[in-house]
Length: 284
Image (cartoon, rainbow, N blue to C red; front, side):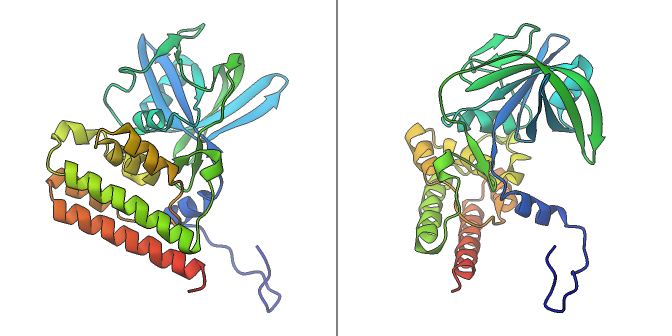
């Protein structure tokens, strides 16, 4: 905390959850899928709250929401696997970030030494044994020793301000370049919702509720609904859209009602928010 002009340090205050999410979102991280096997059933979820802890012995820690089925499975099994995703695996991150459904369906996996699912296409995998567990706020914190691991050549998937992307794209866009990116992403979003709103069954939408808090994951979900890998790749290559904006809850609500006009209004509103924020950041 820096001193004010009067020489006094401003009073500290607790950040609201939305404020903390926005601030901590400036910290870029890798993306992993944490998997576990408990009573013969596989569990998995996308996680970025992961950190190496020690080299001797090799240790790491992961943080899992107390509501997470995967977190509860790890607490019971005392083992998990950490699958570090490559830059071409944003669709895998989106799949495992959703709640419910068959996350492993169609995903190539192999069994680790102790049965944990290992994603065959992951950039690296680590098989871990929980040695200590604690809690922090809404999360379990698992400290684990790494028993086995392997890696292949490649570039990791990055996560920054609610967006998945390649490392070279994980940067803030401002000015005209940022505005062009926002408009390009909005054009893709408008095309996708025009094609898909009102044409999805309730069961197809069920897995999306909860991912709207993670803007990048939710919007890539929506673009993927168009069924075009080329479109998803183009959307992803646009990278970070700029300032974090609202409107994701409204967009999902519109999908659930089959209301195209409301969906288009939600995209227009969040696009305008992003453009105004870019203008302020540029001193306009």
